[in-house]
Length: 633
Image 1: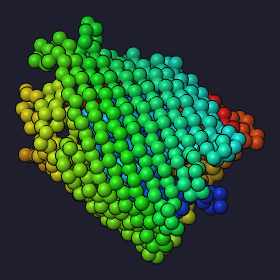
Image 2: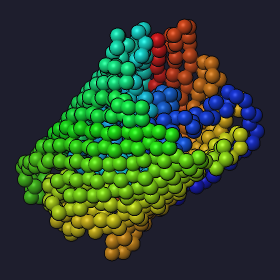
Image 3: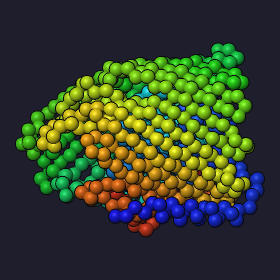
Image 4: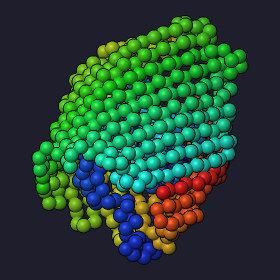
């Protein structure tokens, strides 16, 4: 297959630039364009305290709830697929399917996912279950591309921070009721209510998703609940309590080529309690505690006989606490804090007769634990047009010992319409527990060290003219002590720290102002990855997104979006991805009065029946449609 991304990107770039040259400027158009970059927009992920995007040196992307609503997204993976620099590998791309998330060529376990400040990654394999977070509860998503270890610890590839919606602040309750129905009995229902009673603000959400499966006997069902309460105990002191539960059931479908059928169940419960208090004019305190319980059960049976092939049960519980002091004045925003957590995993694998015939034990159990603590500090120093952010963090854990993560970033405002960014950071990721404690066909190696990286990034964000904005970045990641399998192919795997991986690449985002209610947006990312181990091997990955959006700012909006990833996979993977996948979203207001609004929406997925998959037993669905109603009050 021939990579088609450069051509696709060139066409989209020419389309954007040629259209931009004809755009006429108005105040409303410029207001919409500024949504691509808001000078006063505050983000918390880079330094763990709110700061303007204009002072963020890291490569950051923010995705809003409105954007998610316009694409009628059902899972977090569907949302992240549209972010430049992220490579999302779906397990079938079916309704509710899980996915691996890669940032700038990182491994999936190098990406730290957070929700309400709670790390979401599984302990055994380091990956997050991205289909266990209800999209409806998300206020916005902040994505740091590149290591964020000086703030968050183990996050060599980057951080995806899910910020949930706020509790209400009005005595009259408001909310949203939504329902959609599509082919193969695909359903999505959600109810949200927020308001304030006395000094207690609240946000409540309940949802259900169901699908008979869009291909190959697949199936999905998920129920979710979420609550947030904000309590003002004094003018400058607030408590926030959150709790959430989600239970996805998924049948991955039949895989005739390997004579397997597979299904999984996961249960997730999490709760947080936090306090924020202003201690003095420039000094404030924030502290929180959390608990997270995740259980993941996967059942694999032989397709022909129905006999057990393998069952895997991962049952884990983590409790933790965080605290930080924040000093703010006209020059400094300094943060000093600490994290602590204690996690326990019960891992049970049961092998069927087929695997037992190859020497696998009938049942194996491991119960590893992960204890961590860390201290961190950073400061954002703003002097005129300059903003400089030094940061450092010291981590200790019982798996791989100690690690120190320094970072330094700077921004400079070049004129009124251009921001320059540069950063250097050291990052790490803790070795996987399945590598240190062992698993089926994996021998334990308790002496593993963390994978580590030095990362360098630079970028510019600018109004090239009054009509469109450009955001560009280049990066270099030099990773050492990468985990590689040192055992011969006929033996159990044994992972050691022997790899050296270098990743270089570019990112480019362009968004135009609207012209006759039409605006355009395109994003492109390229990663060249080299592994130095004996002989040098390399791969090139590309990703490109293009969206054409119509919005009359009254009652009708429509969005045609194309997505493409070139994975550079070997022939034996039987992958197919030489196709752009196009989706169409239409939203139409049908009734609006006072504080009530009702909206009809229609989505056509994979309009041209494109094939895009990395494993031929996990093919993506053909074209399918869904429609729904959304009532806001």
